Length: 333
Image 1 (cartoon, rainbow, N blue to C red):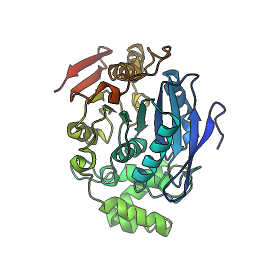
Image 2 (image 1 turned 45 degrees about the vertical axis):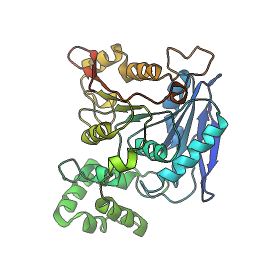
Image 3 (image 1 turned 120 degrees about the horizontal axis):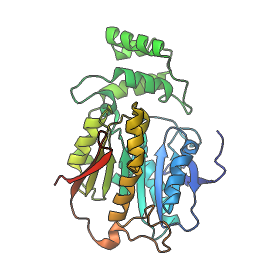
Image 4 (image 1 turned 90 degrees about the vertical axis):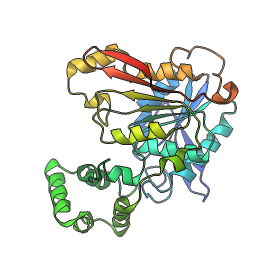
């Protein structure tokens, strides 16, 4: 691990005494704060942190429990609500009066959602969210995500550090074996530890998230970015439909890695010329009274949703059109 030179160590004590660690990037005059909790190495997200800092946010990025710099054992999808609450409450206390946003992509979107269930936040910005164990294991038609899950659990699901990815040949062989003999028997042949095998069994047996029960009480504004070719596309749509606060859905011709998954050079160029996803983000932040790139030079903190009163339920959508290179905005409800 190479610590970022432009950030300072940030530590929070969890309810059981475990130290949850990460890094904080500080703008000269913070006008808001954003929290990201990730299993992939907090120090790797410096570019994301600097983008938020450029908008006037103090950006706190933490390793989740049992990963990289944080204490504890790593059990994917099991400890994010309580740990997320501890981090949010600590950061709130450090930044009184500033609006607090939870953000993250994929697994980090799950950590944001779980923290929002247990702590008071002003907004969420989620990208290609992984809603839970079952949603990562099965598609909307009940078919198993064998390739994605075998690859992810081999690389990231076992231990405090990620392992090198499987080669294409080895991954294909493991998918074929799991198809032939079943996911559990196949995994027993891969040399995984008892703890890893227990988590693997849990992956395939956990029921889907009841979205109304889990998030029905949340009213914070949600910016939800999904991709036309992302394997979590349908889950993001279900989350948008279940959300009880204002939600803005962002669609475009990308996959789980967003613009990095666009193979057509011309389409990528059109997206850049249109301001990228950041253009939609800044417009949404401004509409919700939150610091944005356009308002970063202002000296006063942005007003929070709490100061503005209860949010008005509205559903809107931005879709990037690859043929025209334009963003299309529409009100869906």
